[in-house]
Amino acid sequence: MSNKRPWDLMNWAKKKSLPAIKAIFHEGQPCNNLKILWNALHSSYNSAENRAINTRFLNGINQCDNID
Image (cartoon, rainbow, N blue to C red; front, side, top):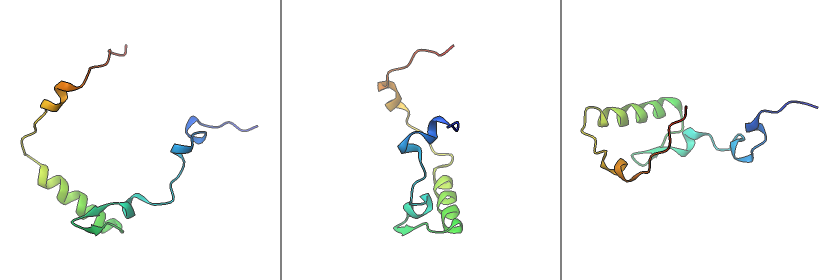
């Protein structure tokens, strides 16, 4: 008998056949290598940096009880 971790027993947590960098598109082009992926993430972050954020949508979300 071998010990299994909980995520080993769940189908949705198992390794997927499509790597994430092949599923990400930026400006209509696939990010299919790490350099392109990094540039896409870097430019996306920098385009949002120091911009105002509208957090009013959070007002409609019910709050959960605190976990002690």
